[in-house]
Length: 240
Ligand SMILES: [Zn+2]
Image (cartoon, rainbow, N blue to C red; front, side, top):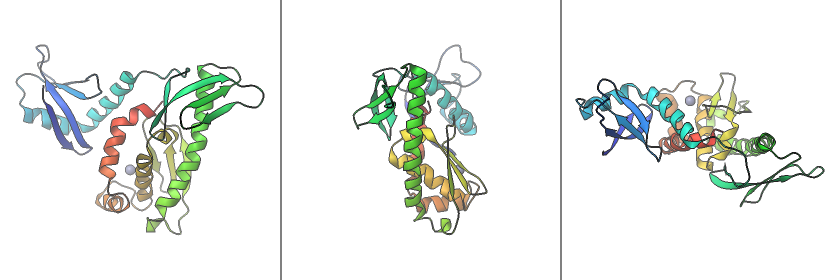
């Protein structure tokens, strides 16, 4: 098995090709232990044919990887000691019973301390989500202010930010200038958060992903390709 790299409409795709006696007609996909894509191809297919098939089915490949990585990652259990993300860092949960009005989350840069009245996964999950939402509201609006200063087209424009907990999307922008960002994005490193905000700010001017859109984005974030690849690779771990 050798590592192959191709460029598709969705960016760089790394994979390994392997053959198996039973796979004789269609391309089959799976993940290796580290979450890398393994393409099981019919034995008579050339490497060029495999490549062309992947390029033609980019959206399907992306969908497969997202779902398979989610499955591989396993469900979060919201228990003591479990690692949770915040701004790209991984922190253990320290859970405890809250007394009086002390329920909530305290983050001290080493751990996420979650105090709830009746400890249990559902209550811990709810308290965490509430905390993430508060952090996201503060951080996203501040970053949006900073990045907007470099985006001349946002001047004299009313931009409204809304937070949503979304399963597949990181953000979107409506024709009315409402930017919705995924609350889970606050688990990603700051450059990745910035890149999603930059992307949505460009949609205020260019609704479609055309040439003009990418020209704007290139000016606002020259590293957008790298950031997008990173979000594609790591994103599934933030989406719970
Ligand atoms: Zn877009």
